[in-house]
Length: 354
Ligand code: ATP
Ligand code: MG
Ligand code: FE
Image 1: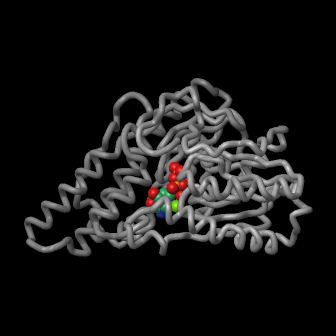
Image 2: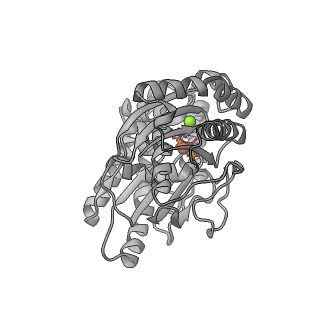
Image 3: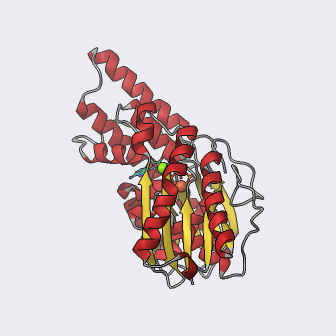
């Protein structure tokens, strides 16, 4: 089985060709970073227009790299939401057009399910598993019971963790997108223990997250340092603060995951892996901290390769394969969904879509 995947939910235009033998035959991603950098964040209208301009060419490139024609495909999968609706519409319409023209099944993939199932594309991960989903718009702990079967144990009560990285980077004058820039600055820190930041919800019951207090604490340090010196942040201040922020996030994550693991083990005594996914899963400090936790708990730990953590179309093609081989596909009347929670029974999350 060979499937074309399309991803257009945010500021990456992406196309990929993946097989059910877990072979990534092509995986092309075009970041719109330069289009959005002048605005310090993603501008939905610019994103939608850029997807429209680049998607057809990217699909042609992916097909050429995979060495196949449209007639070789078994299905076409596209992100159907959640995300910036203009972009999602571009991807869905394109996928539907190919499906209609070639008489192929169309699969509308939940972007979050794409992140959630990536570990099964790259590693031998069986259901059930415990998933920490950490991305630009989400921060959730979920029990993944099967394809389409997610149970949320916790979520953020304010900012998503990727959003916290992006806002902190802005406060530190590092630019956008914040995650990789904060990670680089933290690696340069000469006194990473210099700032002590609050650890929101650590030690408290439950598996929820909160990041707004942490971000406010960074802002206060930035303001105090500026007031004390009468000058902007020095490079050393900035790098030490970045390191403190990153270490605190990793510690918060480990605390929340430890609680979720307890619940997971009670419900599933036969065990399962701890999996991390989403853009923030590319963070090496976080990966190392979670690996240590999983080892202590006697659980396998799986983190996808860095390029499959941030948005890509291989994960969309793969989630499409997972659904399609269970006999699922969607009608061409499918309407793109700006909001589409993985666990519809959970209370709606505060903040961005999904
Ligand atoms: P969602 O998946 O929730 O819809 P999204 O698709 O915009 O949101 P992703 O592409 O999955 O988000 O992740 C992007 C986020 O990951 C950004 O907030 C970015 O700052 C963060 N990020 C990327 N690399 C790193 C890193 N190395 N360390 C920390 N954060 C990172
Ligand atoms: Mg992005
Ligand atoms: Fe994403």
